[in-house]
Image (tube, rainbow, N blue to C red; front, top):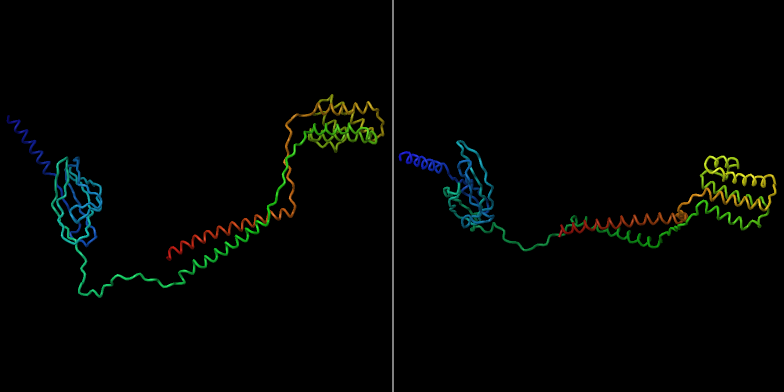
Length: 355
């Protein structure tokens, strides 16, 4: 029984000791202030460092007491002390717009759910003293007055407006010149180019149709070999028009079918004899050489898609000059109108500052 009583006594003593350790203190930085000024009240709760502490919260412009507003409340700040204690504090910013002495009720704080209070405070709000006996020294309200016109303030926007107007007129005049200077039409056409073998076969058909119109075998073989030389140049990429028969055959021997080239060699040799030795040929020999030419083309042709070539008609010097003039006019118009817009925007801003 004695042990139970002793234990209870110790518990009651411990609880009383803990309760005795908790204190709440309120301090104000100035007990006097002018109307509209601010005063700061610091509320500090001293409690065990692991205690749960809650302070009263106020919304902005909420009245703490009639006539005294709470403008701001800081977050709780914690500072460690000795013997496992800590100081928990918040700061209230107060103001008032009515001159009198105010009673500030005790500030509350909850520690582990139990409410504690600080001592009450006083705040004196003072008004500005007015000497009502000498009201002449005070200036009463004035009527609306017109400010005198100052050219220095208006000269800059005026002259900038003149410059903007001149630039706009330049832009309009240049635009009229641009409309008179009609754009140059660039003629572009797309032509399907025949492949080398197609072009050669087309020329051979012409030679075949006009065979009886030629003045003799020399003209006939000249036309036929020239057609083959052009085909070889476009097909193989070397300048056959400027090479002799033996040079052409040597180049082709290293590149193509020797049988077809053998028939082509016979054709070129016959053509050389006709052109340079006045050799006479038979009708069937001419036809055989024509067939050999067609056969060579068919054996060596390369089938590929027909190429479409873009042909642009070259511009005359007058057209080139016209294009340059249009570019210059467009540049002047762009600069003139852009500068006009910037200047007018700046003038409007300056006028808004003067009004």
